[in-house]
Image (cartoon, rainbow, N blue to C red; front, top):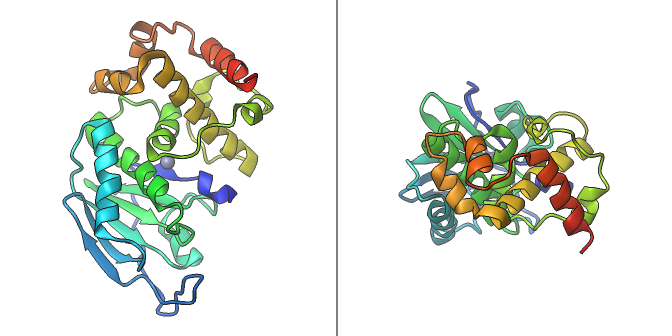
Length: 246
Ligand SMILES: [Zn+2]
């Protein structure tokens, strides 16, 4: 499902999340859902679907916290069971399936109606990566890299390099910021290209070390010095072609 690729963070934009669960909301098996409250050290979740358990929320949280060496300062998670209500709650259009938003100091993850038990772990892991990037890294992680990092740590399927190599190439990876612009194809490309950068940096200089070094500093500087990649665009092109040939 193409829509599952598009999970975005919206930090710093002020909006009021609308929250409304229709009493007629049903899952594919016809059962009502969305009445469960789940509270953990990291998350206060209302109207969670019936298939979701506290231990599952904690397992995903633990995995992302370990990767990014951080304890999440408690966030809210709101579930939506109507496309209309979900789209009203954010400004990213119909392709977003979950959104992390900031209002003042409070971070809220908005989970859309298309998040099912099948993709919960990767979608929630993706959003928690955004949460920690916001709470811990405060601008150190470049925008062109954040979606890829979130896909990579969230546990999305690995990049299909044969497909990626056939897309119109970009001159500068920094244009991968603002991934939700343009056509569905453009959006898909930006997410996967950014994820390919995460896979490349993980291979070349151990992503966890690079991310750790970047706290309160600019990751871009460390890509040059620590990873010894003077020209990221050139390295990215070579990485994509090499992996596409496999
Ligand atoms: Zn995202």
